[in-house]
Amino acid sequence: MAYKYLSFDVELDGWLTDAPELTESERRYLSWLPVLRTLLAECEAQARVDGNQAILPLISRTRGLLDRWETCIVSRLGNGDAMSG
Image (cartoon, rainbow, N blue to C red; front, side):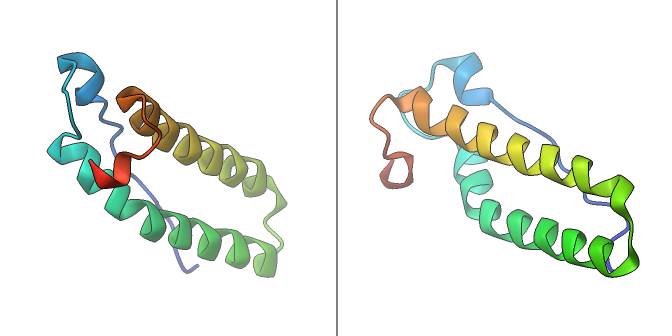
């Protein structure tokens, strides 16, 4: 099995502190996002090779969580361009 566990913490500290720009954790997360999505795609590919149909819905839900987490960060700044923050 290529990846047995994919784990991370969700931090929304910018929301809690009403930060006027991206926080350190938000910047870090946005930089990790492509890596997390790549790892998740590898998990999905291996699950398909192994015939592990039971895990596919969880992978789909995790992909949705990553998308919503990104949306939370970007929408908090209200300008839709968090990467330049």
